Image (cartoon, rainbow, N blue to C red; front, side, top):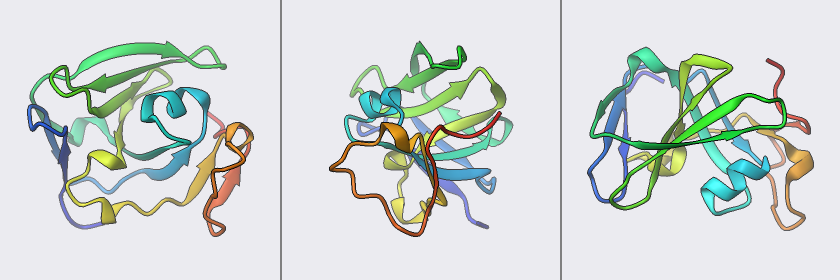
Length: 137
């Protein structure tokens, strides 16, 4: 991907951009992502943290996954939109929800992770790699 990735919250209080090529793009079906997204999965882009420029200040809350690693989920304190997440196990990376992109067509998932937690009504794309227990560290 040779273009700038730009996005932010619904009200515009938080904006971000990066020129980095995403490290990964995937749909996460873990229960925490289901709750955070309000859907059956979270559509995620992962980029190097150092490449992301942020305007505004996300508010964070922390959850701890089954492997004992923390995820800090950032959202806009004004409109509540999810805008980014930080991973304890991968501190040099930043997670951006595809739903926060100005151009969501940039999102091209290569895999579905934690498919063991997927709901029966969640029709996954047949051409993505399926990882029932998530990704290895």
